[in-house]
Length: 304
Image 1 (cartoon, rainbow, N blue to C red):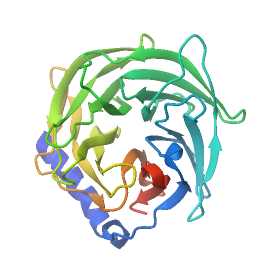
Image 2 (cartoon, rainbow, N blue to C red):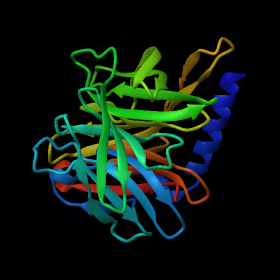
Image 3 (cartoon, rainbow, N blue to C red):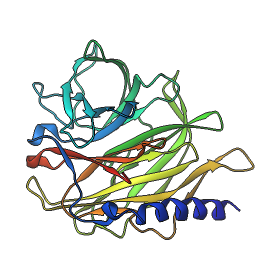
Image 4 (cartoon, rainbow, N blue to C red):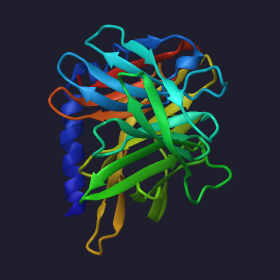
């Protein structure tokens, strides 16, 4: 029954996407955000959305102290997004380096987020939109980190009134990605009932990062982006997949059901997608953000 449920959701969703010509075209209208290597989008999360404008928090994977870490982008139609750099406030910790993922914390009014660095450090962040600041409330470390792990994704979702966390080691080339999941205690910053599975994608190939970002919706469907990285000047390629399903079995344990018939619900031969967010509602879809290195950042709404 569970397999049927997953297949039905996947078929309906993919069928809707495949009937939209802009999704299949290779010359999609990616909207530039900022040029230059400092402005690549390595994670994106929705702040608020209405018919006129959508606001997103983004993170940059910068490492130097004079380079930005977080910003807000405001998207209005086909106009170039407004870009608002944020002042990052932090106390008694070091300035975060190489932020690679970002997720909203459910039921926190879309002003609290967790950002993750490539080495597995998590940062609980509170956004003060009007003050153009973001404050780090707490730094914590992911459990069970292998010395070779390189993380580019982290997502939270409330399922059956429990806070589920999913993250992944990105993998590289013939080395598979590794998806982790568990229950997240936001008050103690602890992850329990951890399990994992390896994961590879059929496209792109070569110097592929099998999971460059992921998000999970409130039905438990996990979406991932994947990217080919050939250096600061490309060429790049990317895809988005329905990776599988997370839910609770009869024993109330989290169960992962991987999609055994992977194919891209979206692909692109020109950009390196490193940020992915699910937008709910009639005006929604999946928004992707790129880290095109020397060519900067851009965004695109799949299914629009």
